[in-house]
Amino acid sequence: MKVLVVDDESEVRETYESFFSQESGFEYVGVAENGRRGVSLWRDLHPDVTLMDLNIPLMSGVEAIRTICAEDSTACVVAMTVCDDGAHVSAALTAGASGYLLKSCAPEEISQGVRDAFNQQMPLAASVRCTMVKLFQDSAPSSEPLSLATQREAELLRAVVDGLTNDKIAAQTHMSTGSVKVALSRLFEKFTVTSRTDLAVEALRLGIVPLHPVWVPSEDQSGS
Image (cartoon, rainbow, N blue to C red; front, side):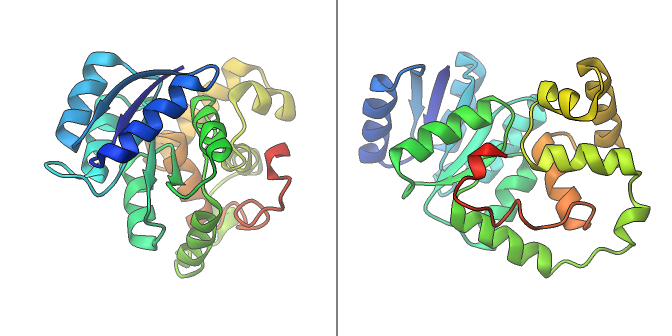
């Protein structure tokens, strides 16, 4: 799995390089010290996962994420920062980030988070989940949740929020993988989004999928 890191702190970049160079299954392909360079390297290197700091010069991390995801809606960019406040979390996920981790996360959390993002799941640091709960609690849906989606659509949205892959959704819903892809494409159009992360955020924001237990999970969340 090819990993690109975008961070303006040399010490952080060196730490990531050392970590991913030694971690099995990862290939550290490049590093950028600002958002503009990060976007350029992403275009040249085609990484599987890009770790993006948010507070970086020349082009902010949020703008870099938005630029990358506008060019390729399937791009996997994970925000990796020290900020877990609502403004940063909301901005990064709205821009198209595939997940949101903190630099304070343990090494095993970071490596697992990168793997989860690569597998189309949505890694979120524990404190970020709490931030998301507060954001959604403050955002009341404009319509009755059940009127916004059919039972089947709600089931698919629940699976997306849970971070399930298309194959796992197919097994759970007794659909073919192809049918799942078609159904998700229709949901993208219905809710005017371009990524699974945005779709999950909309499902939670509108109340179609309940906040609990996904966003305040138990310690064995990895089994979801």
